[in-house]
Length: 256
Image 1 (cartoon, rainbow, N blue to C red):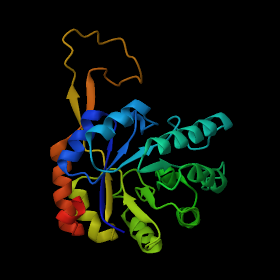
Image 2 (image 1 turned 180 degrees about the vertical axis):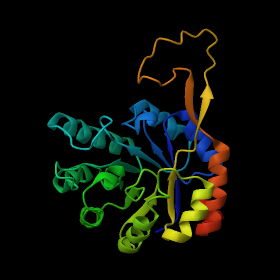
Image 3 (image 1 turned 30 degrees about the vertical axis):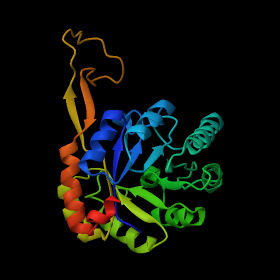
């Protein structure tokens, strides 16, 4: 499989910055600060109008675990159909059973609704019971990519499992290394794992342009400042791309 440097973005500005920095593919979501949820249809349209690299859409009805109610799953089905019709290059999904296994029946339904576009199994994989059993299920389902940190809080700590997953996946599934990825991590982990696909958000915190500030009225999660905005750091993406090309031999041809 071709080497891939994927950048997770949650705004038009971040998507444009990621492409300028050298991202080869985007994952589009909303609410990046809580792990990402399904984006708005108009956000997807605007991003597609402004970037030329492939865009995969994260579809997650809420934050938290990956065991979904009937209504949540129905929402996921509707979202898959809608974004497939809008021309997404791929969907990013994950559904688990109460026992911590990949829910093969529900995953199969979502994939069938995707109409042949690419499919990434997101980090639901990192909280499943048996990563190798989940890998085999993903192969049967036709998943082409698994986003994983090696079942750790960050990918550096998961290096051993990532190495084993890359070897086990072979040419059937691409292991996309994520969680804590930057240029230095790519240089360190690529030779250790053999991975040729990495995923990062390259986020930086920008100060709000608001001049008047009422600091003691939170609108969301306690402790999360309303005046700190997350955006993609183009320079961080560029540094990651340079490290990626050096390690994976992507070169100029990978930009096409």
